[in-house]
Length: 219
Image (cartoon, rainbow, N blue to C red; front, side):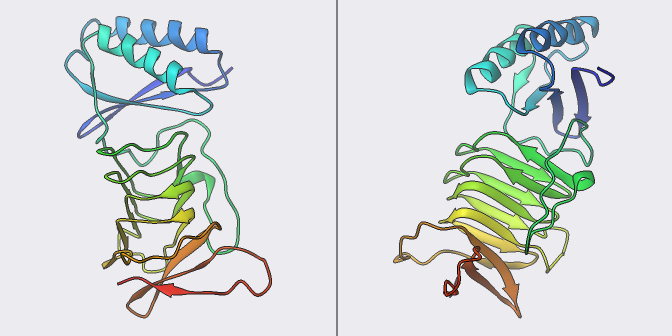
């Protein structure tokens, strides 16, 4: 394999440790230990977050413990760099084009208190729970329920969109427009897309099913 199994990227807030899931979990453990040990204490005391595809919560926790053994400190609020390597997800679909060069894949749900920020598009393979925050310069795609805060088009892109399997957000932001969900929001069980229309955030079903064109506006 030509790519490194473990890449450590420095950001202004800490380290992003990118793990290539094409390697076996045992290989990743060995190479992570080798990478940190070879730094001879240089990373000690640094905050870090792990980024990997196709990894269970138990495996992620085991790798995190290895980092902690070398004096690194886990953090959930590290801003992601513009390019972190690996194999980002490519999504080409109506209303939310995400390109491989500018899309970051988060391969797990996001817990309360966690914050992820990226200059390009963000795809989350899981839920964004209440109290969590996702900020993207481009579009946001959540393959689960969005209950926290999502800010798309943070760099000023008013054409950015937010798509989720279920949209139940505490707050949505697109560019400089902010909205929240009404308290009496009707339950639903289909994907939705949020976008800007004039100066309002509009939500519509994200589906090709004929007749399903119900729209709602956030306040």
